Every structure is written in structure tokens, then in C-alpha cells.
Image 1 (cartoon, helix red, strand yellow):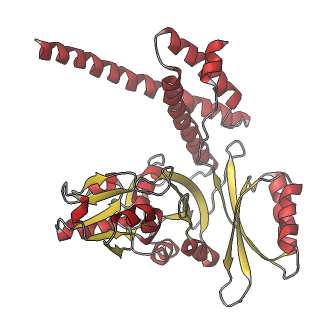
Image 2 (image 1 turned 135 degrees about the horizontal axis):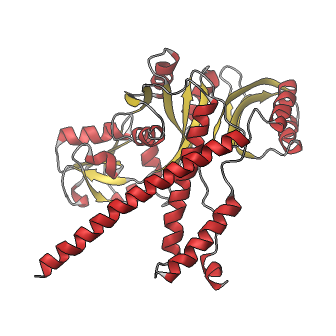
Image 3 (image 1 turned 180 degrees about the vertical axis):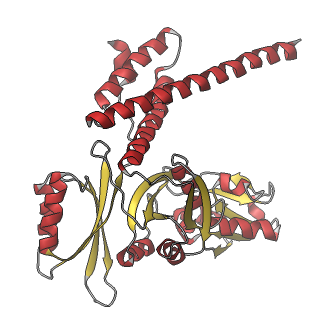
Length: 393
């Protein structure tokens, strides 16, 4: 009898889940109509004041039906983020007619299961057309695939919150003619992966990408006398463990990637920093136009004249034009000892007046200057609302 009663309850839950999906699809259709209105009237995608009012109202309504304020807030943060990203993608398609292709050929590091593979899947899930995955074994090969026309796009990891910038990618950007057309941030959750549920104490050899070893150095120190074998990608590490089929070997990578190779996670959250994220950039042969109502980021590269204070003078140009710099990275110039190339990420659209003024000024005062790309910001910061205060009003 209890089993039958449980089944009846589960049927009701299943029915409600179906209703929820239908309602979410209807809501998404309405937000697409909102995007159409915004593009016609040059209205910004986000209205955070309205979002805050929406969340406060929903929190109060949720309280009346017994829902926890934090639960309601988290749920609608996800819904709002999805709505914003869908609207941005729609506006981008309208601003770049002909950009939709029946097939997107994308080069990335490693094979199925690598973090670059997962980031590729995430980014192109909002793009029209089928996805053709082109796994590569090096950043040089990835760039070449797009430059030669064998791929339409490349997805490249550029920095990690734990191990910092990926210098090899910056060096590739210094010499390529490709443009940055997009970005995304992807959570990196390292797990210890083995062919079956073995004891950690019997592991003798560990496979992973060098960046992964750096991000999990504290865990490696705890392991003690274990041989580490660097691989070209996390997927290569998983493939190696899958093929060896030994109780004494393991890999470090994502649990989702490991499942593609029949590997089980025997320990999770291995990174030194628990909030571990990687930022990826998407590059292509052609630039993209970013509508002014979509938040944009621009990446610049420059070398300054050899005189004291030259870099400071260049950065003052950004301040004078009220442009916020989010990243500054320096890399040595090949063949020019003691000279640096500077990479800058700034918030702004090259179609906007202040950005155009800054670019013109920087071109005139630097030895070398190039815009590597202007692209939509896809990191959607959640609207902050004090749930407790909202309920006390």
C-alpha cells in the first residue's frame, strides 16, 4: 500500500514538472518578444531596477505559499540569467545578418570530456545550427584550424581563478589575425577519476593537464609518493586511464567528462580554491557587431614607447573617457629583450563614442596598437536583493 501511495504522489510531481516546463517555455517566448521591442527602440537588455522589484514581489508571493525566500531568489536568478542571455543572442543575430550557419565547426583543446569541450557545448547551445567538434592537441593547432578555414571558431581558455593567466594563449593572440567574438566563464570542478571505485591509497600514477596539477597542488601534496604524468588535455588523461584499466592509475578532470569514458569519481572538489572558474574566449576570422544595448567588452593589445610613465599615460586615456579596465596582462615581445606587449580587457563597445575616442588617442601614442575584438559580455551578475529586508517591508 505505501508503495502504491508513493507512486501516485510521484505521478502528480511528474505532471507538475511537465506543467512547469510548458510555463517556462511560454515565458521564454514572451522574453523573445521583449527583445524585439528592445531592438526597435534601442532599449538596454537589462533593467536591474525592474529585476529587483520583480524579485521582491516574487519573494513576498512565495512567502504566502510557504516558499523560502532564498529558494525563490536562486530560482529566479537562473530564469533571469537565461532570459538575458537569450535576448543578447537574439540581438546579436539581428546585428549580424548571415551569421547563423547550418553547421558551426569549432576547434578546442582535447577530445570529448575536456573542459574546453564542455565550454564549447555550453557556448554554442544558444547558437543556431549544428555543432561539429574538432578536438586539437595544442593551442597552435587550434588557431591554425580557424586560420586555414578548417574551422569557423576556436574556443580557448584564457585564465583561471586558481592558476591565473594561460600565457601560451596570450602569445598566440599576439600573432594571429583572428578576432575575439565571444567569451564565457565555466565552473571547473576537479574530481579524481578511476575505472572503478578503488581506494585512493593504492593509486601510484596520476594523469592530468599541467594546469590541473597546478590547481590541485594541495591535494597532490596530501597524496604523497604518487607519480604525476602531464597530458595535453584532461580528456587525454581520461583516455589514458580508460585504456590502462588498472586499479593503480587515476586521472583528474570533470565528473561529467569522466562519465563519457566510463570513469567514476572517487573524490570531488580537489582544487585549491573551491570557487574555481575558467574564462574562455571564442575567436573567429571575422569580427562581430555588438548592439549598443548589449553590455560589451573590448580586448586591446599594445606596446608603449620606451620612456618612463608611458604605460601610465596610456591608462589615463581610459580614465579620461570613463572606461573601466577589467584586466591588464603583460607578455614579452619575441626578439625584443626587456620589451613588453600589454593586453587590456575593458568594458565598452567600439561603436560607442567614448571607446572610439580612447582608441584614437591610444593609436597615436603607442608603438603598436590593435583591437583584438569587441564582443558581448556573457557573465550575467545576479541582481542583488536583500530577501530578509524585502519580507520586512
